[in-house]
Image 1 (cartoon, rainbow, N blue to C red):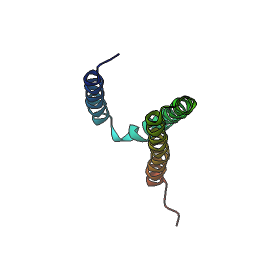
Image 2 (cartoon, rainbow, N blue to C red; image 1 turned 180 degrees about the vertical axis):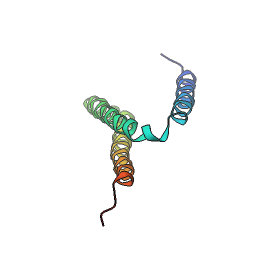
Image 3 (cartoon, one colour; image 1 turned 90 degrees about the horizontal axis):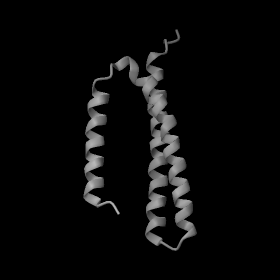
Image 4 (tube, rainbow, N blue to C red; image 1 turned 90 degrees about the vertical axis):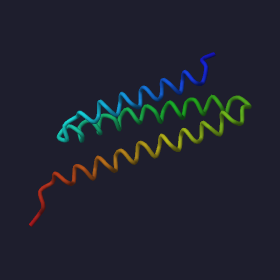
Length: 97
């Protein structure tokens, strides 16, 4: 079994790497990148659903609770990402006179 501190360390390093990568992206590329990331967030939601389904097949109450939290957070991530992308795309539309 992997020690929890190693998992936290991996999370911190990935978070820092993601921040520095996104920080260097020009603003014109943010909208297409966000659209692609929304599709990947859908994969996260499917993974949360599958793992929670397995948790409900077993009797582990904590696995079920954390699975439900994962589903809620993944859903918020997907809908929030699409909402922000829609808002950014409206900024580029020409105003109707």
